[in-house]
Length: 145
Image (cartoon, rainbow, N blue to C red; front, side):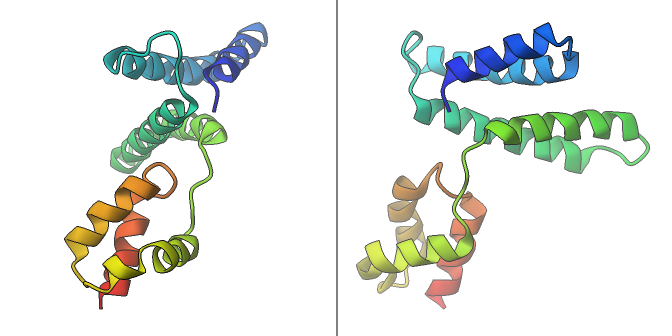
């Protein structure tokens, strides 16, 4: 995801007077800028970083939805709307089957050790940002049995 696309979509939402959508996109842009400043690449923000931040924000909003009390339906609806907007920009993640295939093809020698910690350490470098950590963990646990 390119940050310029986020900016254009935010402007479009502003022109359409779609305040909730504008705020959701704006919070994404702010989060990306903050991480870029922290990592020292303020002007030239790589797409990988934007994708990483989008996934992190999506996870945060998902946690907000899950922990929101049932009595606060208005708040839950607001979080759900934000989640839906953010998920439009999120990169497509690999499924459990795709992760399993990659592990068996590229990491067969590490899988043979049956050492889950070692496998996770090796695999996460390759699959970080491409697949959900929980999915990777489940597949590795399945393959270690």
